[in-house]
Amino acid sequence: MGGVIVECNPVFRLYVRSYTSRLRFFIGLSDYNFLEMDSARITTGGKYECLLFDMDDTLYPMSSGLNLACRKNIQDYMLERLHIEESEVPKMCLDLYKEYGTTMAGLKALGYEFDNDEFHAYVHGTLPYDNLKPDPVLRNLLLSMPQPKIIFTNADQAHAMQVLNRLGLEDCFEGIICFETLNPPKQADPTESIPLSNDSDSTENGCFCPKSPILCKPFVEAMKAAIRIANVDPKKTIFLDDSAPNIASGKAAGLNTVIVGRSDLVPGADHALGSIHNIKEALPEIWDVEGDQQQVIQSPAVATMVLA
Image (cartoon, rainbow, N blue to C red):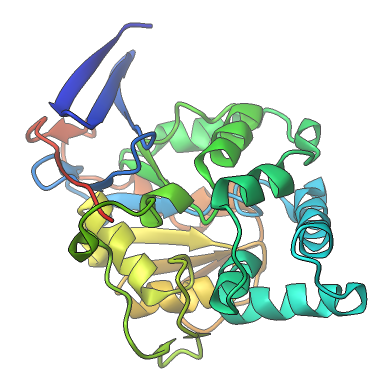
């Protein structure tokens, strides 16, 4: 399938691919840029203009085994690389995950120093990706949605692409907001970094995220950064995630929220899906658009800002 490289500035490339009647965008993150698509908003004329999807345990079930394998690898890393007392590792791993959103963010907040890429390679390198199979049902659902769809994950880019490729969904999304997007390596100008609040970040919905040098869900700042990156109106954007704290923060940021993987609502959730495959029955309004359902690109210009 044909494609063209659009040079937007010396450090960013937008790869545009044409798939039959639909136009796909993959936002390249290899240069770790913070992207603001100020004049490239895509409109559908319906109630919703964009969908933000979490990936792990949202696009595929937890029964795949990746979650447990990842947790084991994180614990092994804490034991072997950070030399944390073995008896303390399991509880510490879980407690940091619950308190900071990811164990990695918690370890960094406690002062542990390690390379981010090395950590991701260690914890994702031996995951049972073979357990993930192509999902044609979900693929057809995603392709039938008239709105642009963006992955918003705490995982790194390599893991995100591995998962999407295994599920056969690599061309179903317009972009990926991942770890490298929100946590670029330090640059020369520290004033161009994503600001973190000086105080602990909390919401009225029960989500509490202490300060951390890692920006990730469920930090409300991470939610707001994703909204800026996608340049969407949160009131017209659906955010789907399997994590209750993430849902609470998404609602605090103004998003329409859907908890996935359970049938009961959690604080901040507008809808609940037992499975992502039930989305059309639960949210038929996604497919209700005014007039022509084709996506309209108002401008191909993409502005970028490199952050420290």
